[in-house]
Image 1 (cartoon, helix red, strand yellow):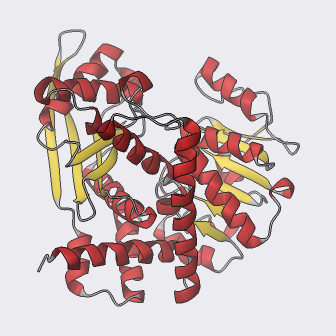
Image 2 (cartoon, rainbow, N blue to C red):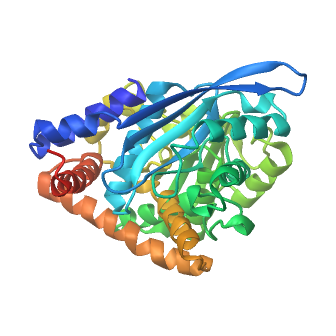
Length: 410
């Protein structure tokens, strides 16, 4: 099942639970705006190549749209539509004043020099300069993009409209970025995990965890899990997975990646497959890589007591019903990985005010937002007798419905 079909299936199921009127379904089922741009760029060898780029604005009901930009050969329109929709529901469920968007360029970034990537990024920014804006649409980093690309976007946009740091988040600190932004998503994943363990009456110091995906989210989540007393017994990236019953030395794994680029030949554990990691007997499973790693084919073999979704859409919709029959609590992506967009919101606030917070202040401001969101979703789960995933969609949909009605869309 595609990411877009998964999104729509879950949205429609949650809408049925609360008897959402067709008028609201129609509005929320379709993106407000779809932008497709073709970017002619001169490569280092003098060749002119045209790259395809996307920016989908799913909703601006609650505020300016917000969402990352990814560089990948697998970027295509339906995927970007799904990711934009997830951002709408994610922002709504945590109660920050943003709508949802997503963007990307179909590209193999590792095949291009830094100079070429800069030219491509600036071309993308110029093509969408009338879409982006600190009061309209605010990009951020995503797969294969970072503070570097956000700095290029900020600079290129500012060449047209003047110094506008709030147009993009995830910037370098000395260009208006926020302290605490880089670890924010991983930190939020672990905060959600700790609240969930408390609900399940499980002691973190007696729990084991497996983290699938050891990029920014997975590596930080692993570090914070260890800090909370959890034993991380398995980690992985696209080259394979590693298992150590006594616990992976997470910091050694991070050093290995910084030196070698991947986990390949990491000596801190026994080599296993990603499939083995997903189905091992652990208390906590954190899928933090890509979409659809848990499907109807392997859902029946999942043994974790708690799944905390660090990635967007790591569980396909056709696996939901299988997992719901198990004694497993799932903290869905639109709740679990909302730490990143929440801290991005505070970066935007700081840019607008010209006043900047310490990392401790950022955590202190973010913690109650994520905690309140978790409790609201858990309460909806109890009220409607549904999964945490459907409960999260219900909370988001009810907030969006209220805003649509109050604005008088009809």
